[in-house]
Image 1 (cartoon, rainbow, N blue to C red):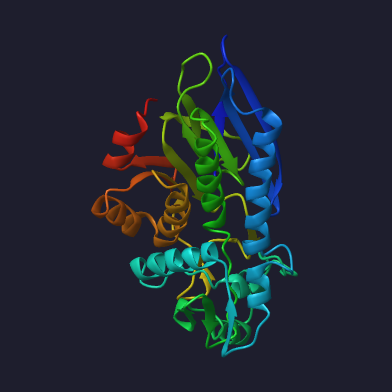
Image 2 (tube, rainbow, N blue to C red):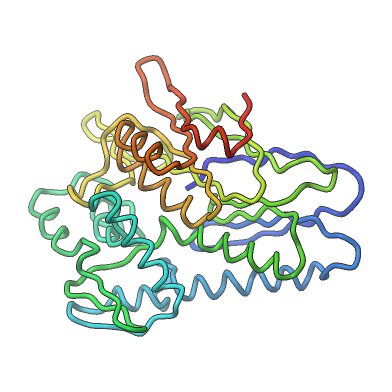
Length: 328
């Protein structure tokens, strides 16, 4: 769930093509520079739409006939043959789960639904302790295993790729554009993005990172992006209030509850949009202190927005400043 606005700036010369549409309950947009003699725009759009159609068929939790939703409907102690990209994302999810000591987890969809945030969510409210305990029995990456080309489960877990599927989609689109000889582009899906090369006037693709406001958007930092994915996760766009407490859609899988710390959003810049997507969620779950330590230890480019008494505090990792060409 990225909170990035693309700052415009276009000059003379080669044409800037753009198109977009619907994807996984949200939208996507592609901007690219078309040079003379390159692939025609209709074919580019067709190729990108083909990539997204396949990803939706494999990974979308918004359609009951997708590969992952058919798996989610299976009972405990069953297996289903899966396409290679699904297994790849399960492995990435396992890696992120281990690195967060189980706080990040791909199997939180029943929790999202219980609290009212998921595709099957009925009402946004704090669940009873009994209901939470029952659902937690169906949450945990340890209940999944890969057996050859099959994904198996020993409990009735449900896999939700929403924290990494968009980043994967962006990487896949970028690879397809590169394969067609297109090397100046900005690809975005559900807010996750990747940019490469330059705009027609030779200027870089520039992204405005927001500091969260409930009533307005404020561009706090402008970064140049070339060859990197950018992802922002934040708890202030999707939440509900009950008894004066804010409950966000960002869950700690160990407790089964939304996070309650003061880290409002995290932006990650990474060569892989898939990893930027997953890491921004992981860091948001960890909270300001653990996330900062994690980003510094692993040399992750991260931009933190932290709630304070008088508004918000911005903190950036050394890798973020190095990678982003950041300027105020």
